Image (cartoon, rainbow, N blue to C red; front, side):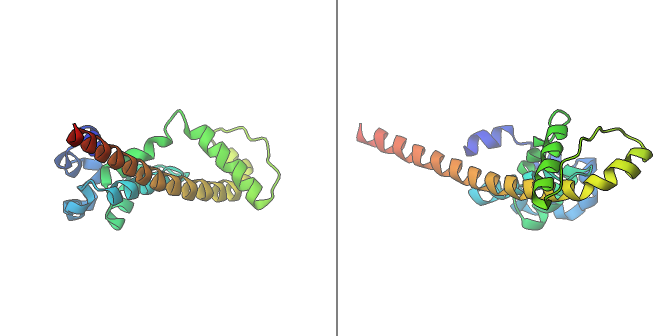
Amino acid sequence: MKKLLRSVMPDHHVIRGHRALAFLGELLHDPQIFHLTRHSAAGGMAAGLFCAFFPIPGHMVFAAIAAIGFRVNLPIAVAAVWVTNPFTFAPAFYLAYRVGSAVLDNPVQRVSFEISAEWLSTTFVHIWPALVVGCMVLAVTAAALGYAGVRLLWRLMIVMKVRKRRQYRQT
């Protein structure tokens, strides 16, 4: 697991030199945010998935700030944000709106999206509470499942490695 993740993760020098993260300055020099351990990988996944469901632009920056603040793996946190991408954000936020409506016990309205001031003032003002509540529910759920999933997968990989080592020693 560790070898696979290291092979696909970018070098920490590349991340430190990225212009979008330049405002973080010396905070990017904390070695803990680039270590790959069970805790840091699971925490990075949780931070990234939590930030992925914010209905605002700049998810990767928020994930980077969260990873630095919690001292978890920064590349994993930034990569996990891409769960909501240009292909998945509409269904994800529609699901968030539906979940928020259910939590708030509001009827689900038929919503057609358009980028205009009129739409914001007429439609968005009515749906934003349900959208925000749904986003928070999905963010917390995704973060918890991501954290547990990485911890479980890491554990399974260790168990498989130990079994393989035992079989090798027995032969």
